[in-house]
Length: 209
Image 1 (spheres, rainbow, N blue to C red):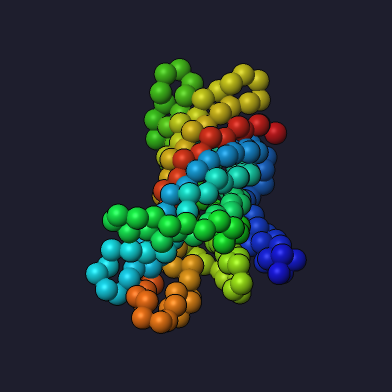
Image 2: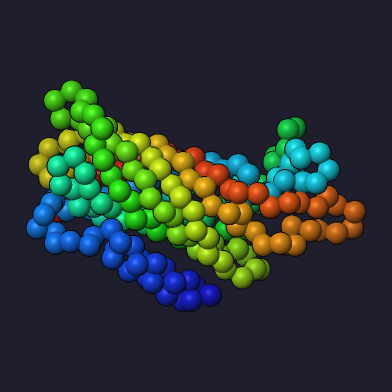
């Protein structure tokens, strides 16, 4: 399972590189970044009784690596992220969670644009692009989802070749569940699949190559 997932991730990574870096690296500066963040989810599923409960991934810590080529106000990037998460049944009065359910690998080629300069050197930038994710769910087959993501970052020079960035973003993919996987039976509520939305916050350290 993990070997198969790694091969799929390698294919997605290669495709992302081709999309993100179509021209010579001599036309801009290359940066590599390492980040850690947090994600919160809503959607994914909704019960058919009163529409107040849903199963969704529960509050993972995310780890990322990125490569970017910047030329003037614009750039192209390729971001890869990994996280493990539990699943939670979330309702208006109760949240019940179980750990170790999801392992997720994501790849996102993106366009980057600087929209403002804050102070002498700090940059406000926007990022947007498609999102490719492989979801490995315990006791179920892994599955691939295609969605979209966008974010805003504030980049701060740290001296030399280093800079830091704080990024807030949002993403959406189709539900990670397949039809019928949430039907427990025995009189329990059934669930309709919904788009899975995610908001994220990340701190990244960049190094100029």
